[in-house]
Image 1: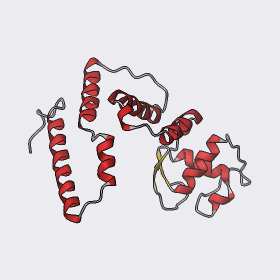
Image 2: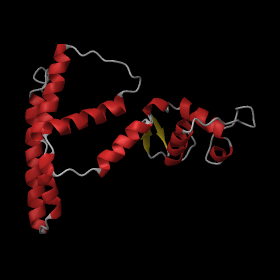
Image 3: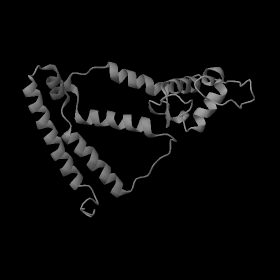
Image 4: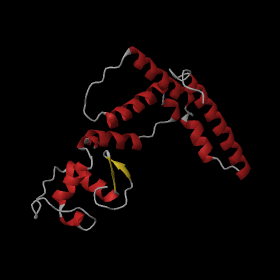
Length: 187
């Protein structure tokens, strides 16, 4: 934790509070340059975080916060557009969804912009996982319909039970087919 305040989660690769998350994001996006009045030796706590921005930013970086984890302006606009654009369900294809999913994953995980070469075995595993995901995903129109309809408490419980059972069965079958799963110790 950067300042001693209660951490709300991992933000930009470090466990921080909401205040330090926002401070780090603003500092990086604005290319802010701060100057410490005490020669860069401030002890960072909830009081000092407001008094010395240079030491706060340094502590953020020392705790592991990475500028590379921030979305670029283009990625932010793209994310906003995806949220705002509402396509009719019949125009969305699995390939479109798969492409959007892949873009989402690469935009948030490509920290050092390194090209990763996958072995043929890794590529096959990745295709298997993506294919299994797209086959088992509940179609958007079905999930919307379930959310919009009114059900009694008993019907809600029945639907939840059926969905949970189905998901567990799919998860078990998927896991059994993963390479190396059958060779694990069964204890």
